[in-house]
Image (tube, rainbow, N blue to C red; front, side):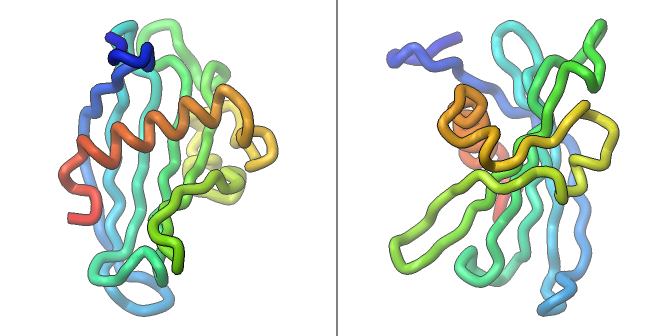
Length: 145
């Protein structure tokens, strides 16, 4: 399904979540995950990690996307990890691509590679990652809840 501008519309399927404690401030952290579907099938899994009770200005949220096909016939060789940081500064909220190699999803075995910022910014993969971010942020009610 595409919207009026011709962009693919994604549907988010929230799955599970866990919590822990922030190592720097002791506040509760949460990790929520799920799948992102397009009309042709599942296109990504996602993991969102944030600290509750503090602003994005002091504790940005991390979004890790394992992008590529899932399901029968798909393997980790078909997928890559792309990571984004959701933050806030004096200009307001923002989202930027970060290096995915140091993120937990990069070590999960669910994708063949984790992309660095320089391999994402300005590419079609960036457009896909930001569209997935929008879908997850808007459709998963657990995010920052």
